Length: 443
Image (tube, rainbow, N blue to C red; front, side, top):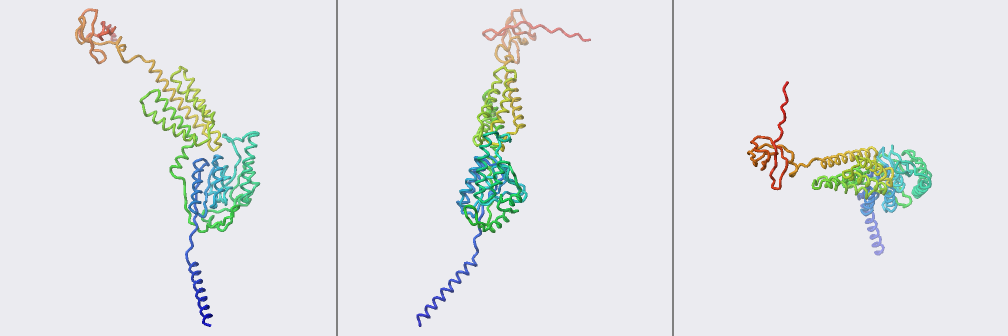
């Protein structure tokens, strides 16, 4: 009997402790989920690719519950786009792509980045689409090459849409016909998963959603959001790969070095030229370039440099300007439509270069043709004034200096103007009286 009473006592005690522990756990505050919000408001290029991929890696390493890419892009390089969406697909932390704020777009390469997300969302008054591959000038790629490029792009985007249970037909049409949808239409057509006005509203809305195909249940309600943006250095690097700046840096660099070679010791043109050339080469290293465009630009700089040495009467400068414009327009052809060089900017730079080079060449030729202004020969024919009587030798004042002189024309009194006829080996001037100008009659 006592054993039964003791057993009952211990069971009651265990039940009481269990209830207390359960109540304590229920009353303890739960840890808020953490979300990393990555602002991506730029072109798709190697700099932004590294930025986005580093943040996805950070979310995985630091155990965030989700990473949200706040997307607003006109598109960019296919190679960088592929590296970004490959990183999204491999991420163990769910990736939410949110086209925001209102007025933003996910165009061209941005569509692949969006379709690769575990959740694709849009804010009102945003749009997505226009994914047809184009050449550098914006025109359709022609014939067989176009078919290959378009078929490859369409298959890639269709598969991303199919994998995430989204509209496959629209993905194909976005590539083949360049279709574009607003947020409301995209939601109705199952192109996107959700539409939300703000990031907090989006996180509350998708909480508890099971992602496809990874099967991760999202925990994002009332999440603690960490916002990140590109660093100042990344923004500088992104600015330096602007095609117009690259062309400008290359022009300034080449011009500075040419001027330094023409006039050694000036230092400033060579220093500025070297720095500009390095900055331009950085951009050429990052972006894909055309060999034909680069060769045309090098030929243009060679024509500009030769103008000072070859009497072409401006023909080489004109040829250099033409080569420069053609080379600059072709230089970034492999980079696609997003990285076109502005035609007005190229023409302005070419005209400035041609004008500067023509001016420099003119000055060089002018200096070469100018009479000698130093040495003994410069004194021949000059008129001086006798300071000490010449009988036959004396002192003559010429161009601010006193010289020993002699004459064969008899004594010449001080104050008399004389002309220098010859300089002997002993640096003694041979002079003759200078003809006095006849007085002009006053009427």
